Image (cartoon, rainbow, N blue to C red; front, side, top):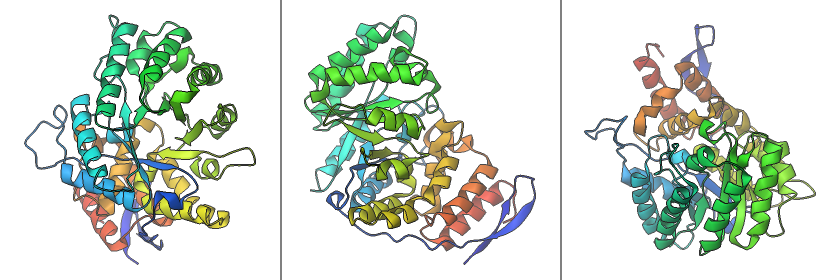
Length: 389
């Protein structure tokens, strides 16, 4: 196995020899799994475009769409145009519409493509003059676009609503309006402030338990229009508590990138399906683990997925909103894209120390598909940053 010189927290440099036996890429169907599993997929930047990266996104469409087919080949669904795709952090509604069009066209070429699309209000900038009626129109525009393309909606949280709402009643009004008009049941998404500080106090309450009561009331009032809800609060206890209170037939989709293994496995009272950004980075492991669970082998499920949890906790460490950098870095290390560039220049949001520890943890989690390639690419990144690897 290859050896590489990696920086340590004390600024020293020491050799690290890889030990991980890569989890193989094995094709599955979504029907092989006992849980519905969506991977929130990233977009691949075009590093050769003549643009101003902070101002004008440039996307490598061919590589981005090829990555979606990889998810489907592994039996995973694609949660498209979500925060992992940098919605609100480089990807605007203009690019998101093109991404949705193109992804839906690719999905139509297969009979096994599970996909759903984020619809929110990110084209409406929050501000003191934004009204609830403005927010209703913004949601209607995006939901209408997704449905006109033939897609299923993932109803994203709204920064504009978080800023404009005066009470929980405003949330009930907005969600009641949107849900009453959708063509098929949606997946709701409660994104916590650790992922997006602008969403603090969502559902009209700073306290998550009080906010949960409001959210559950909205779901109960519109249960026939809600397939499920993804919560991203990084708290297994809160997710389990909410899961046990959902109306019959409404699914919980874990968005907990810290505790997903135990939440997907479940307990005597239920389990969570998955809609996770980390599944982008550990897709073969996620697929193999779910297949093992489908065979009734929970020990193998945990043997595969538990080693990925320290990696995920590192990638999603505070400031959690910068997790996309780690996701894209792993895609680069694994040869799924030829560069470590992101739209908006977001590759700069994590330190070399963070990336070095990510490399170690990815090796231990067995998610470096080709250790020789990953080592060569890690060395290139280190050399650019002044570390002789």
